[in-house]
Image (cartoon, rainbow over all chains, first blue to last red; front, side, top):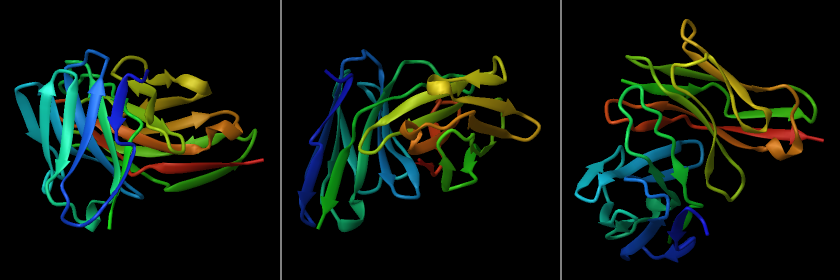
Length: 117
Length: 113
């Protein structure tokens, strides 16, 4: 089984619908992240969580919300999906530690491709 | 503030020839730097990382990168390209006191037979 599992892998929905993308991990990592990938733009951070009680906005959090249900689970919600949220979404995890000289190596899930019509 | 620039959006090489993917960074302190690879329809995988130890870093699959502080560069190289190297490559810099990572926009590597 994969260390970081994302569901669903593919989803097509309509404008205005509520969507939840789920992520679970077996790495035992404290930190979890949600990124969005668009062609030519690289990966941009949506939200991150350093533990169950710590949720932080990333670079592009508008239109998204998250829930850290447990150390191993981190879900991303689109309350009312719009077409420009069509993208590939990645969940990632890393070990506690970091800081300016930290080596936050990320373990990625396989991605969830979302299409909003 | 930290930032990273990948100088080429697309690089095409022939199988067996050298690979050079260029990355420049900006950081207000000694950064951690990474290269990740993304094969088609897959998640990202760590290729190598620099964390203020040796400036020449060796990674998986024959890739290596050299940290050059004077040039603020962290270019990725491989002596001989293989067809399986065709993928998108991301240069990443540690982003601040919280250790968040900032991704470059990616370089797509094509390998011709």
